[in-house]
Length: 66
Image 1 (cartoon, rainbow, N blue to C red):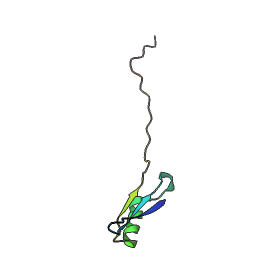
Image 2 (image 1 turned 90 degrees about the horizontal axis):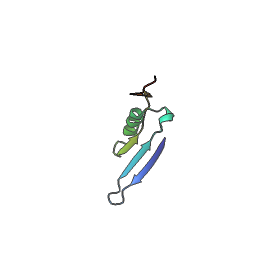
Image 3 (image 1 turned 135 degrees about the vertical axis):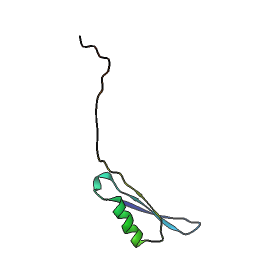
Image 4 (image 1 turned 120 degrees about the vertical axis):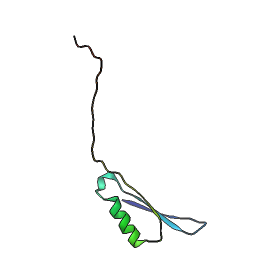
């Protein structure tokens, strides 16, 4: 997990970016709830991905095998 802090120079408001890699086995919703309880006034962007199913196939159409 990578957490980056950003500071807007015009408004002096802090924001965060949290990046969770797919192989870290962390839940993005749980991270969001924890962040909201610890930093209720700071906005954050949480990026994550989950691989649930991989489907691979090959279709061959119109092949004459005579």
